[in-house]
Length: 254
Image 1 (cartoon, rainbow, N blue to C red):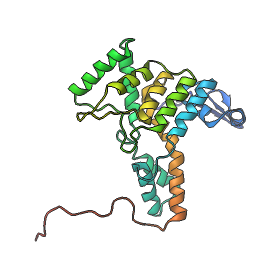
Image 2: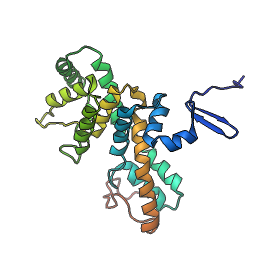
Image 3: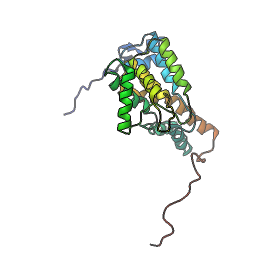
Image 4: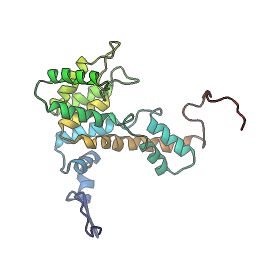
């Protein structure tokens, strides 16, 4: 028999009253930023000033990365097909997974597991890299298809240092970066996903909430892409790669 009184600890709704984690939505509207309320929802308590600034940096850092990422391209394709804005944004969100937007969660998972093994992050980095090589596993959150050095990572760590969030997870991520090279000897710098994975871990977030940071942030960018597609371009235009070469079976008879 279904529970007649299911439980939630997020929001209490009554006639004329909305309280998020106990706080009146009216007070939150006037006195707190969007980033602070996101922190409240995900962590259960309002952030202090340092946590609020760090959360703001995280959300801004991933707001958009151009037209080419799968989520932006999918959003534009769905909008170009004549669908409403919410469907277009949903289409973009559905492309977010392990290969796009999922690295911060996977990076945080590894950092949280390995940083708990001791205090010598350099030694732990050596062990982790050995494990990755032996299992032929790629370390998520390192390297970038466009940026040799991700400018967002540099700023993220600057802000983390300013507000005293540099802990074991950031130390481990930097130790990995210093030691990690590809088979060809190429360095793999920490990208913004790896930086967020490290910072969110030092802020005490469960790695399983990692994709939420990317989704919440990128929704704003996807809304902009959907609206631009609607107002600037004709429907059903050519998007993505269109110059395909067929390499299937030749002409056949039934």
